[in-house]
Image (tube, rainbow, N blue to C red; front, side, top):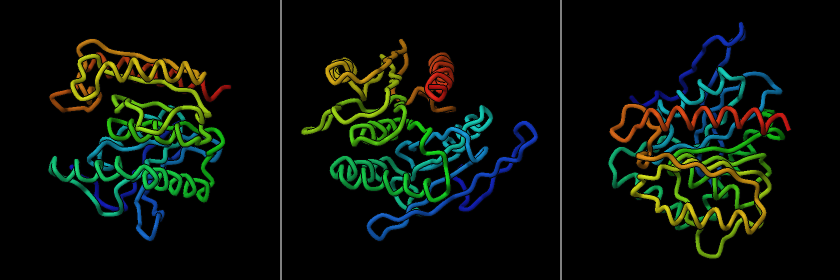
Amino acid sequence: MKLIKFIIIFFVFSGIGIAGDFVIYNYQGAEYEGYYSRVKADSPLVFMVHDWDGITDYEIKRTEMLNELGYSVFVIDMFGKGVKPVTVDEKRALTGALYKDRNKMRGILYAAYDKAVSLNANVKNAIGMGYCFGGTTILEFARSGASLKAFVPFHGGLATPEGQDYSNVKGEMLVFHGSADASVKIEDFANLVKELEANKVKHEMITYSGAPHAFTVFGSDRYREDADKKSWKRFTEYLKEVFNK
């Protein structure tokens, strides 16, 4: 079920009410509608980029899971306020346009980052992560030189766009990939390892046997519980390691 705009989610974490709400930011005259859920003012921050269907209940659920662990979350909207693709063609058109315009992709990411700054989010102790299209986008954020501690794509596109490299990456990398992914070639995974090593980017790369593209998406025919649980466990362990440095 799609989310209703401006819904506020409250739940209890260690006796503290955590409120999440939609927030507006702008890029080149267009409005974008992200979702921000803060635990405490000094809580470590996770920037999350949505899959190709925009911000849905899935991202909100993952936000709640991270809130329960003590992390604030800013979900970045890449499509624009009110843009909710339904058909595969609509999703391909929106993501394809951004893949063709990497400057715009970066511009939207930094507009969201600036919004997080204006909300006094703890951007100095932050990481970025994303699912599928979001995972691909978070790698773009990494290559742009964003000042985050780490970048974590879950089953994202791993091929490096022509003319780009990883020489400006400031944080570490943790990559989760399904070895049965028919959308992202295992050669792209291997090439990314070589690029990160060549650019001395600290990284950890994990594959899961039998896991197809989008293996973490609850309720879908591609969901693989074993790979989802194992990747989430490693991710949460990794967050503790990164944020304690």
